[in-house]
Image 1: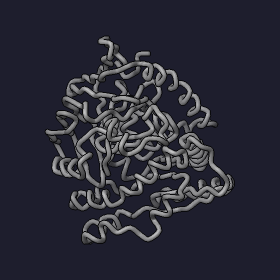
Image 2: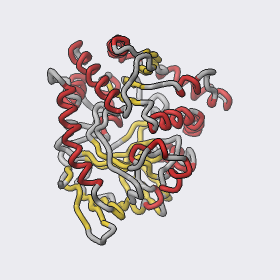
Image 3: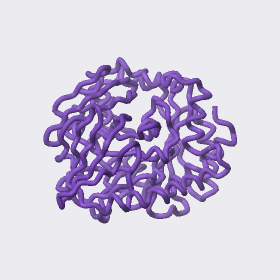
Image 4: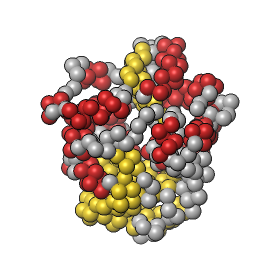
Length: 399
């Protein structure tokens, strides 16, 4: 497990991530939510103290235990599934920051829960995401998150708890006296890659691997972003494409755990931006139900590439935060089904209205599900001028 020194360094890194992710500086008395799973209590206590010392107002909320969450989806009727406590809208309308400490004690406890119930509950809470997205677009909200090792995660990743912990320590630079300096260095190195990508006038990107043949249209007024402090760790560079231009086949060779369900070998065939054929070796019914959650759930909200030169993650971790940042021998590509990230808009995000989002092809959904491919691949940019550039090969950007 993480030592006291590791936890202190993790807290330093999360405060860096929180401040880096928010485009405006924090002000005294701003309210910051610390949301945490029970095993992460010690880190939550350290962060609570740090936020007080910064003059901020920390609010702590422990997440549902696996038993509570299982009971909720087993016993809730329709009204209970969509119930929201009084004051939730006011709370999030005034929230300035959020730190989430993910330390699950179970990741398969909802395997028998009705996927439609899970979807209905997610849709009922979508208003929270909408509020926070708008506040982030205005520069009034910033967020970050991390993961702590648990016996459950290590077991599903087929690692010992010591091996699992070592992956986290290495990936987040907690074995360095100043992990923040390491993150700041990667933050700076990624700038040149993003600048290079954003100079191109790309009609579409073509992703090719053993099982992937996918064309993705970046769309108008888009920019590549990433390594912004939002996720600890995060080595990916990504954009939210114009969902309408997605064509071809995507395959996730890496397994995924979501809402207490395990899925494996998800294959998606897109036509005119929509996943028209959906299959999976395991968990197919769950996948299909998730992608039927709402109109946008079967469309792309994100396209991402991770450079293996940045990421030290080389094992499956049974957790999306780490798995979507997998380095290994070939880096990784991942796509997200569902909601898009409006901070990939190249204009002034504060002026990005719902009408303009729709016009530009930013996807909207209660779902956001990352599916990862770690195969050897080539990604080429087909330019509006008719030329073609290989932008990613052998697990790294080619610039």
